[in-house]
Length: 230
Image (cartoon, rainbow, N blue to C red; front, side, top):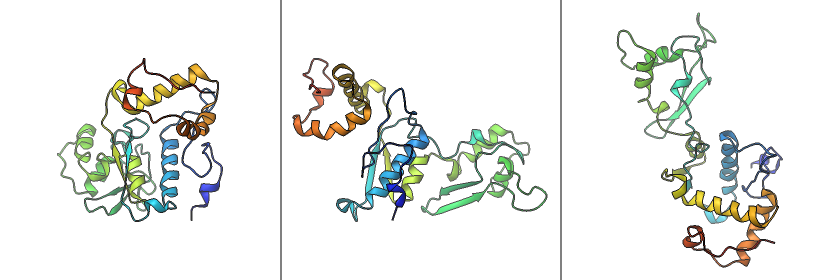
């Protein structure tokens, strides 16, 4: 159903999983588009997991900037016809979860192939405007419209697969358990071995089977015993 799952790309996946790693200092950093590609890989693979069949799926996601990029940012749009515009169309889901599309470029007439600008867009959406409307006012008014509200790229992508994204609360990194686990893993790696991240990911299943289950205290107490990697 998804032949692209078998194709090689810029992300180094472990075979038949959505788990990937980068070689720090050599590979490119995981930016928002890379993270979205990895999540899409996961969403497609879930279709083949019998344990998840006919279940509603919620995915808890860390509140990181690479996860929470908005689908559309009003600051990227200009006010007048022909002004800057990062997209050809604006897609969003209304209050009934029905997908809607707004064409942002004129398809005919004297302004054919030009961007509409926020002023023209607001008029087409029947938004009541003051007689003299400044760009800052336009952005404030349009921010209440569903297309420009709080949905992120990841949430919209997940919705196409009928999956719900739940973001964890945003804490200082010192209090975020995911950050704590990540820092703990990096500390062990740096002190005990010279493996690349890809090797570490491949070794994780072996370590899990060989070590006793960790407790929350293991990740919070610096003086707690640490496993040795060979």
